[in-house]
Amino acid sequence: MARKPIQLPVRTACADAGECICTVVGVRSPAPRATFDVNISDGGIELVGKSTRHMILPGMVASLHELPEPVPYKGARRLPSKILLVLSRPLPLQRSQYSNLVLHPKPGTVADMIAEDACLPARFHGLDRSKDVLLEMLPRALCKTLEHPLGTEFSSSDGHPCVRCHVKTEEGLLFPMPSGLAFIQKPILFIPCSSVTKVEAFPTPRLLELEVTFCEGSDGEKSISFEHLDRDEQPALEDYIQCKHLGQQCKRGAKDSASNGNQEAYGGQFFW
Image (tube, rainbow, N blue to C red; front, side, top):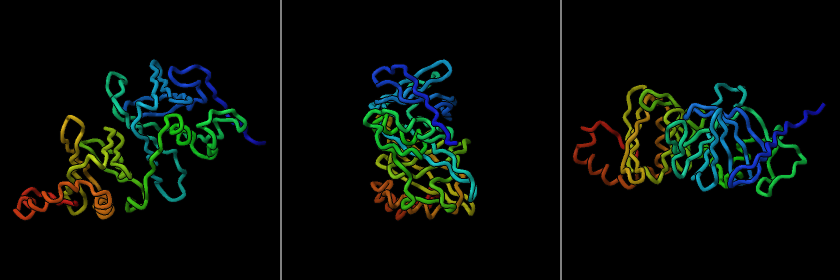
């Protein structure tokens, strides 16, 4: 017997957006650590927690990025990708301000959520019913193109779109994306390629530390270190950094420092 699609058309009106088309339940967020039901509407989404509701409209989102879950071994079941929302302005959640949100849904396709004969708004026409529901519907609801990792620009030594590393004491995944560097779990970071002013590497026989300096609005320059990278990832990271011209504006300064002997004293190796 054919499985009947699960329909969850929560018909509660969402302010400044259309009626809710469907609800994706049990979507996890690592920071803030919470679980939301995501109401998807024609022109926005609503995050519904235990005691809070947060409406996110297209103008509040700068970009969307797919962050695929690494497959632990060949033949393992693929898990749904996480989705990174880079916000145009910080969103108040749980007494804090968040500039980036990551949503991690449970397995579920468009066919599981939307009846085949459902009457949908124009922007949702042509949905791929075999795809993960949040990946298919979120970009349309928020009027944004979903950026995917490109294997032609970065692929780890194991063929993944990301590498494991630490930021301070927190372990997470670093995704070298077409438009910037994304890091999850905590803190959630997105560093646009255009904001990077300098990249330095500090290798040891087994590990690699990558220090990235970047501009962040009116706050000026900041630096962050991605530590405990496997040394085997250095060639792929070098290729990505050179491909994206990260820190190109500092190339001359790096060469001048090296010629004066300052680079050796500092202990860093400039990729670009």
